[in-house]
Image 1 (tube, rainbow, N blue to C red):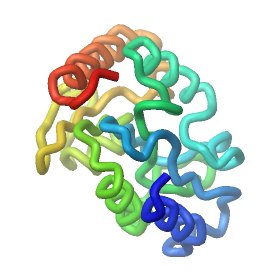
Image 2: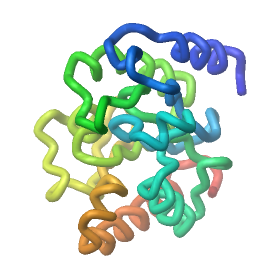
Image 3: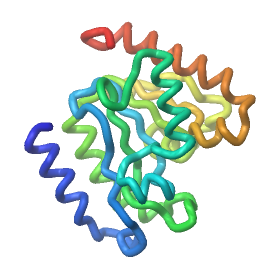
Length: 190
């Protein structure tokens, strides 16, 4: 990991910009390859993530790993996974707007250092924050938007798929579309 990325991570670990710092167990900065061309972004850590200090490690994370594996992606090799907020909102509530605003600088800095060619927003909240505020996840999942030269797509959040298994078929199609986009624009095949 390069020194700028390590410095950013260390600074984030000590963040006190919003009240979420008062209830967190761990800052969940992110996991994966900081040189990855694909960046996954969720909304925020849940209980398991807060306890372990790593994003997407609970049941939803296990499903995300399976979906990524199906298209030759791996959190330990060729993607980076982060969240909009780095600390768990109490009782897994949606992060408040002011919490998102305070934390977005961390995510922007991560994104500048990672330099992804593709960003995947996991769920409605991430999609609305990153792609557009009126994103309709049920209608616009799997569609790529180009922002500042980066291809960005929203997908159903793995937790939503666990709650509604009927979403799995669309989720698989979205991952296949992601694989095709990787093959189209990334410098080396994953």
